[in-house]
Length: 90
Image 1 (tube, helix red, strand yellow):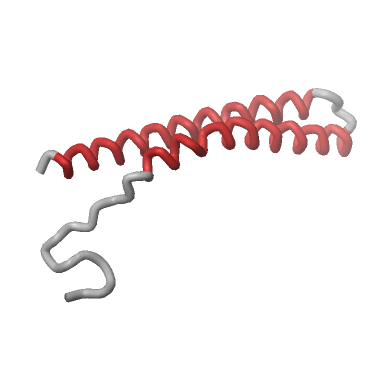
Image 2: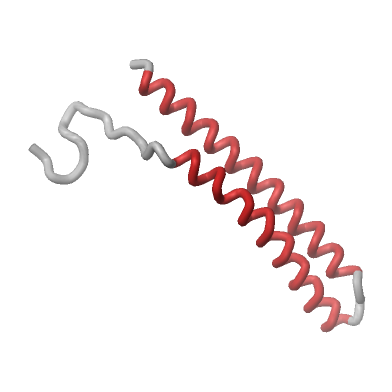
């Protein structure tokens, strides 16, 4: 008998909340990434006197980064759900 981990010969199943946790992170990413880009661009505009170009660029890059990260998270969540379905069908 092992105290840590599953018994020998039995595969450890993943958390049933894994995909849900990933989906819950999406709204936070949608808010935080553009805000970081906005404020970083605003700060750079103040340093270089390029008002409002770097702020707009930072905002755009924040949305692009958020979109890319959300795409990756959704792919990861779908892969986790498919793995769980395969384990359930065994």
